Image (cartoon, rainbow, N blue to C red; front, side, top):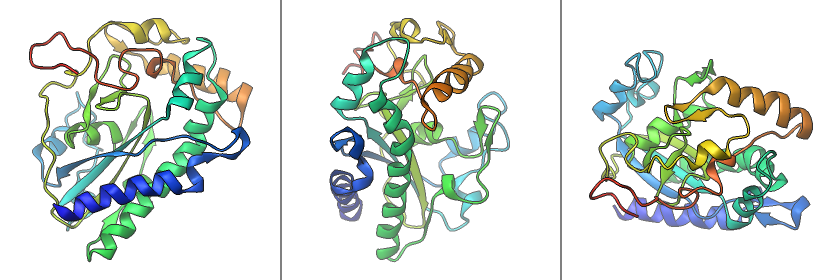
Length: 265
């Protein structure tokens, strides 16, 4: 347990100090605050549940399929800083430049954090891989063989919202990542049961979506992808993004007050 606490502290220090987390073109503002981390046992039966066709499908790989000696999964959420979130609350129709950097350069910082965590695990005598950077990783047709959001749910980090964002104790505005490790770290308790337990169903994300991709039944991937590709990428290339459904909403930086008894902020 002490080892994982040390890793969490060092991950926070890495994000606070690395140049990968700074936007030089915007006076060096930081994109992310310190990450929060959740852990799942590699043999958690929910990983097999992801193979159900109504969830993701049989193409989704379990931790043990990625690495037979796997004992745990370390999943993390990198919350966007107030500077990035505040900028994106404005102008409903187009993303803020700060958010676009967070989406593109921020993903580079995200992967550097994953590499940093792998090194720490190896320094402890363990083995680790990053599925999202592995040659076997496949993503397409709105699915992948390693879903960071579903992995985060299994790892106790949070639940889904109407927009299909992951709502964590630090909200929904941020980036997710994970590594699979051979060290049997203790699993994080899941403080929820349902996949939407942290979503108040308030509908704020519906009104915020410039692509009109969200309704009370959830999110439609096609209009969202079309907006990202044919509006933001054409206008802001090489950057793209949106994030309106994750900002200026009750779940932006916290778990909103939930109507279900026992689930409050």
